[in-house]
Length: 251
Ligand code: PGA
Image 1 (cartoon, helix red, strand yellow):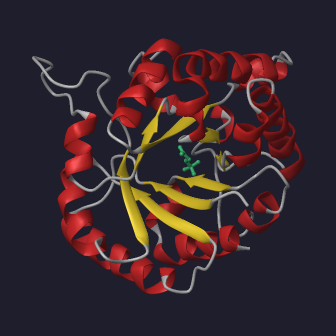
Image 2 (cartoon, rainbow, N blue to C red; image 1 turned 135 degrees about the vertical axis):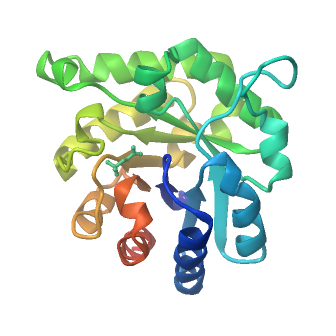
């Protein structure tokens, strides 16, 4: 059975006192999750706080970005080794905000995923089309290319240790969620592309949906056969919403 996940992507939000309240509520609720894993991907400066509050709990933590380089003169960058030392288990790579606003291309995303794997953490590799691309009918082509470049570099072994997230760009932070059928169609396409490389990887890899997931729409999305949980932005900052989404992922 595939791992079910509810991953909070806090983006550039939070403060030490707010995080303390949010994390303690999530920890209290996570005790009853039998099947899904709750993960919070926090800004770098909050990783130490996440480590101290979450160590020994059922909640895992991670980062939202990483350098593709292991060390060196890269001002402002953070290496995968540094993240591992902070206890991270997951690192989001290739989020559309990084692709669009910080110029990350498919090869950079692949190199970042490799850097994460080299430190024995799990990359959450994001793919997704823009609204014009969906309107042009090239969604599957776009996500296929994004996945293909990463898959070529990671190989079967790397893919086996990774998580995929389908995040239609038009649904992120817009309140417009893909319908369960739209999400399922792209997830099934991604899984069949994985199967063309390895059936066992395709069967085992969690594929998360992201884009305006809320407590109210999570159950129907996570009910789809190829949707294994969610990558949650705005709703991950509200304890009651995120906890309800974790429960929906738990099934
Ligand atoms: P959203 O963000 O849930 O606020 O739409 C999702 C994401 O960007 O991962």
